[in-house]
Amino acid sequence: MKTLSGMGVLGVAIFSGDVVTNDAFPASLQTARAADPFRGRRSPDGTIRIAGMEFSHPKWSRTIRALERAFEDPFRGTRRRRYFPPGMLSSDAEAEAGRRAIEGAGLTRDRIDALLVQSFLPDEIQPQNAALVAHKLGLSNLPSWGVDSICNSPIAQLQVACALVASGQAEHVLCVHSAAYSRVQDPGSSCTFQDADMAAAFVVGPSPGSRIDCAWRTDGRLHAAIRLHWAVPQNEGVRRYWQPSRERLMVGWDEALQAQVMGELEGYTVTVCGEALARANMKIDDIDVFISHHPNAWFGAFMADALGLRDGIVFDTFEEYAVINSATLTSSIYEALRARRIERGSRVLLFGPGAGYTYGAAAMVW
Image (cartoon, rainbow, N blue to C red):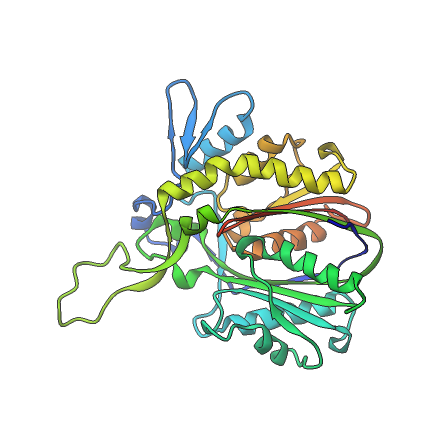
């Protein structure tokens, strides 16, 4: 796979709703049954087994410490999360994030040559949001496409955008993605603590000295591990025959398949990140900042132990933003830039698993 040099991320932005803190949740939810496979158990020897994985000292010391903190916290490591207002369309949030990213890149909308959009959840099943977001941004003389690989969509969009720039078919590409998890939560499950909403965007364009190397794997055996399905919330009683259905669309897990996903994740992480680094002629110790998708509070520690990262390299936004699907990577980049953890010349490694399943990594010189 060819190195994409002389181009990079020019502007990054996010859009979110109001902050929801832990005290907004009823006390009953703190003891609700977990509806996901991320609770786990600890053996007398200190080994932790969780979701198809087994962690023991010394290799997994950071992961074990993070897991122990998560076990003790009824809020699963979250402190805040954001929800879109009830009447807000995903396309409205995406358009606002896109507008901010264009502004952050120092561009005007007429400088955007292509638009890539991913939505969890789109306004309609079909057609999805790409053309609508273009319309709301006042963009018409360009292609607007859906580029979707679920949680790692920013890496997929980054690679497609760079290919467009490298081939001369575009100079600036706007990449937009969003998550509206609050609309598919089970209100009777404690996993609502860690699900939230966010729209995020970045602009890709010419950037002398920058470079990007990507690597991917796909494993469709695991496609059904996580999905949207119609189900009755946990706190709903039996429906009388004359009452309307209480079913709603919610996120669900096949626990056996999800355990297989997690059990194989270390191998995919090491392989895909290793390939991206090799293509970039980097070693793991060269990385200044590592950013990954984070489905739970201990995922960053797990990544650090799996890859052998130095302490302090992982940057995440889980405590502040919770789980926000595809918006995770971009919101973390946004906050890392604000904190000056990423600056010109920084070596950044991105990684994300995406339901379905795909595994993507990008080694970048910023």
